Image (tube, rainbow, N blue to C red):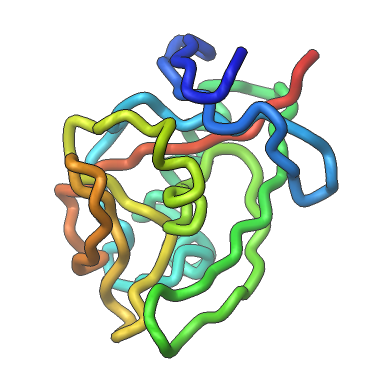
Length: 170
């Protein structure tokens, strides 16, 4: 397995982004990204752009809830890596390196997207990142089909979900 390779796991196609991804507990896992959009959902139905908060306050309507349910149905009890995402807003104000730990499927931050962009194929449609736009509390960064980053209102339900996952070698 090498970075940039497309593999099939759990009945889905994934792109290997990093075969030596350091997890929150210091172990090396394999960072995978879905090879294309899975679903089209709003980032948050009430238009919040803070990724961790959407799963806490609106679990029945968010991407986070969708990803948690997909994790259960997709991989069951298999061990996945806990990832610490740095919730840094993309502009000059707002969040700055606020850590958020997640296990199972998650969305890439713009920082992770930029780091692994060379391995990420063009997706069939726009897709969410986990990164808030700091100009207000309502916009979230997403990736265009051409690979460029932009921001849009969080309640938009026509943006794709492209989950990432960290797994371990057996």
